[in-house]
Length: 204
Image (cartoon, rainbow, N blue to C red; front, side, top):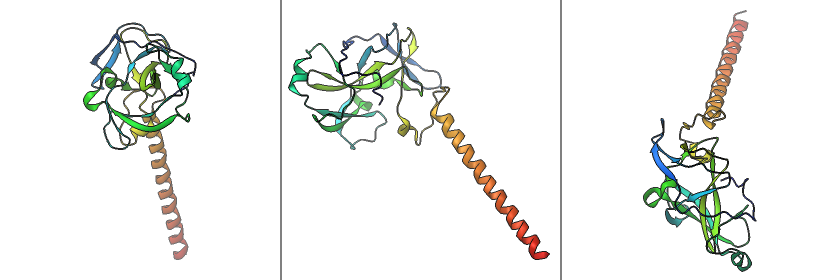
């Protein structure tokens, strides 16, 4: 989860009726699309799902979230209709980490596909003293554009990435695999040459 675009003093209104829709996504089943232009830093919605203790679900729709009670001075500075985005979730007030599993009870955000060059990101946020995970725009996005987000490298340890981005993780994996294969073949060739040389020496 990237927090490069998040500042401790930033406030963004919650879009309670986001103009997003779920449609067919080329080669990737379905995806989430925006029907209206989006500005950088806009909060598009919150990632909803079943709250479970960390490590109790193997769902592909799980997302970890640090939870805890915010300092009273911070809560006092934010009304019920404002949302505070934070740079880090490593403050002393964090109590524990839970998992949000959207497999059964999620909203439209569960349909956002991965991209190695995403136009949105997950961001830990707070409404009053309630901690949530939101989707935030990393850049201006035109209407009728598919929304994408990074699932993280860990998700693709055993899964093929189909995003097709210029610097796609899958391209790097394939390149590393090719280099390992070439290296192994070179070692095998070198070994065969050494054996052949040793055999020739014995005959001589």
